[in-house]
Image 1 (cartoon, rainbow, N blue to C red):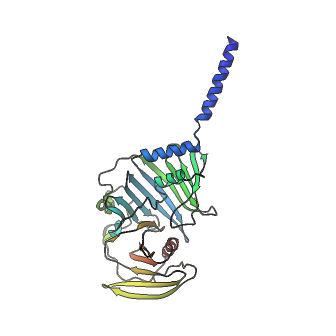
Image 2 (image 1 turned 60 degrees about the vertical axis):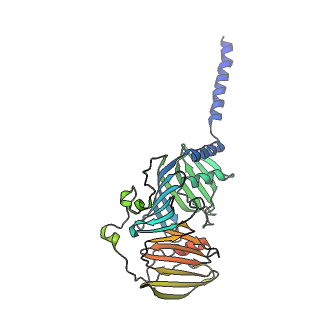
Image 3 (image 1 turned 90 degrees about the horizontal axis):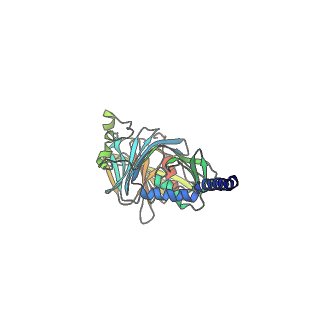
Length: 344
């Protein structure tokens, strides 16, 4: 009996060891689980801190994302430097960039975020992992760490990224690096919930223009300051960044409809204009475009049939429009270099 029991016990131990080995998930298993999670989820809510390393100083955002399948999005970005909240909203009416403290909205038709998904969206991170056949996976403190390619339009310097997922495939962290492995963008998730409930007007434009009724970080503009109309007078702001082979030309100041408008001309490798004004219109509509995170604010990028690009953004009451044959990456650098400058 003892001799018969020993081989049986040995086989049992061996089977348990094999079961333990086969129980460990491979990178392919995790990717399959991730694909299944994307297919089955009805939506999510997340909170995160986004840090962008610009040419001058790091820019930080508190980011809140609401997603309701299939196409409802609400992304609230609050600049820690400026204390101002802007919202990217997508519903059945289109895509909007809302600036509640100015009571201003920018509406356009766009494929966002399918055509240009930012890393603070869960599906963007998940797709980066799923689509990269050369992905590398390891474990770190019970989290899954993936190293994959970065493919973000408008910034070719971003080439690699690291993405941390928890055991239940929730996002923990992400870092996007350049070819020198210097981290240029990172995001730290502080909260993430799959399949949360939403109010029926959670993605309504009018409700989101009144952020006091929403679960979102308030803007710095309160009371009388929120209703204060800016003066039409302002100093000329000259971007500190100049693309190689470009020289600044004339600065023209004109008055249109009683408002001062300044036009800065640039010629050389690229030919473009920077228009600065203080508009009074609260709503602007564009047929084609997409939101662009400039680090200190959200911009709207549009392109015409003749390859002319228009990048529009607001800073301290001044609206900027950059137009010309600049590549998108160069346009973003010019726009970022207007931050922190005083008017001349």
